[in-house]
Image (cartoon, rainbow, N blue to C red; front, side, top):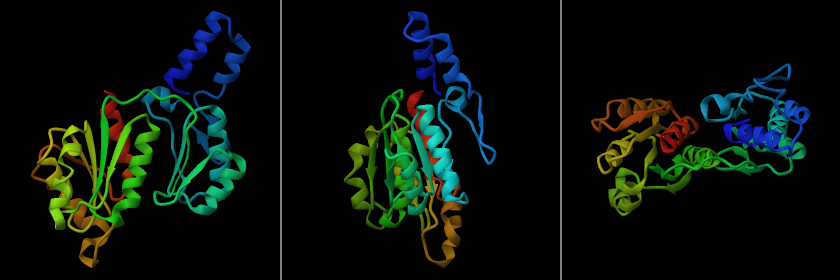
Length: 248
């Protein structure tokens, strides 16, 4: 339940298009709905500007399906991250409108109007191996009402590929840059643009990359002052921050 839907509901009551009882019925699950194994925070979008998202990893397929169906019934957009194909099979049986994004491992349902962002969120990744994290960021940002451009495989090993995207990079309002190995790409991108760059270290690389730790430390030590860093493989978190910036 976000601000747009609350305002529409109250206007319907004021104009006589909806009764008080119907309004109360729609509002009764605020601020949260207790499912026993989960407490759905229906109030989060109204409170923070972003709805609750299902982190599917570690949950049973039945739990994911039940939570997804309840959130869909509440009327907003729904997103489940780190979801397996088996989890999607369970979700789509309960909510046939859901779609699965295999690369991002995300289940999504877009059914509600969302306040549009003011510019473009540009999601950039160094290599094709980083695409699962970049796709997670792109899908999350789109579901939150942003225009998104995804630029893939432009790592520093062939920097001419990145420079060929200079116009897209420099017209973006905020950028999410995903990279593994040594994690150099966000610093290079940040040196080309006058916008915030949210760096996402990925767990891609050979042994000394330590599952993304080398990229994380490299990004934290960036010499470009417009770089901020999220956790390893956290495309979702980066997209949330990018969306907040893009809606300011």
